[in-house]
Image 1: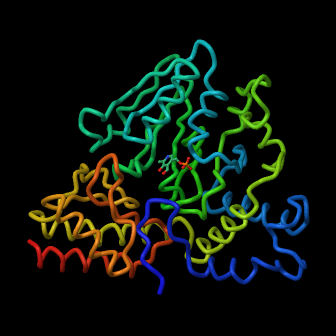
Image 2 (image 1 turned 180 degrees about the vertical axis):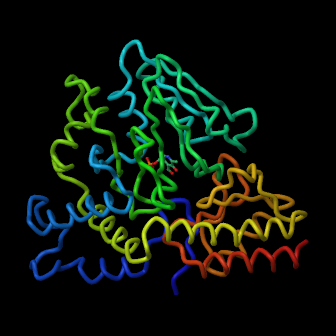
Image 3 (image 1 turned 90 degrees about the horizontal axis):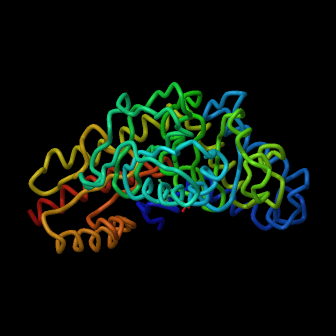
Length: 360
Ligand SMILES: Cc1ncc(COP(=O)(O)O)c(C=O)c1O
């Protein structure tokens, strides 16, 4: 029996995709080899690679003047690569500090050059976000960085800042392709694949071409965005398994109806859980400002920690896994990414009601 996977990442994949991988893993389409054993310069891999790139371009509606780059090193490597490539002397990298992931991005940028925090949610224990219209870039701004969904805090931007004088950069690791997006409002977006797009091992970066001109030739070759943009992400050996799985997940998203369908699915699933909290406010408490509650990571607390432990244990007995909140904040977190079924979410909502009735 397949468990219901509420882990924050790596996370659940569509069963159809897992089946296809299983069917093709030892011999890929009459090749006599697995795709993960063959050359990354082979025509079979080339097709998979190009499919992944073109599906990303179509599903995310990426304009012509943006490059799509497939990288390794996770979103974490981007915390350093962004300032290395885009922060020049005499300019300042600006950040919105919305939570644990934004903090990590800021810490790395501080090692590279001048940084400024435009808004800081730390004192409010990262339970809210600034209004998008209040985020303004300084005159010396190199870029403004936000985290579109804070995976640990369960906070999600609903509208994005519109900046006239500086590119907006967003870490979309935990909500990429969960809703339609106007990429032209961003200088760059990036995301590790392992939540909405596939297994871990590949990171997607989408960057406006004029920003590529900022990268210095003095950078080590892998760390320079131009290396990858100019070689269609085939400068060195790419993570072929992860890109193959990415391509299959994207094909699955296409069949479901693309970003709009993913948005409807995310709204419906997250509402199933938030509405239980509204029905039973004495028992379940979501600490996040209702304006910014995430459709991807639903965080909540129970009346005490013993009940939280009991909830996690009893849910696991019912094959609902991964509900423990991040160790830095405690509580509970249901990660309900694109690939999680509505049935799994409905089952969790029913379990929450039954648990509250028994223990409330
Ligand atoms: C919002 C966000 N940014 C960055 C990361 C780090 O990603 P990676 O593990 O791919 O380096 C994560 C991981 O969970 C995340 O949720």
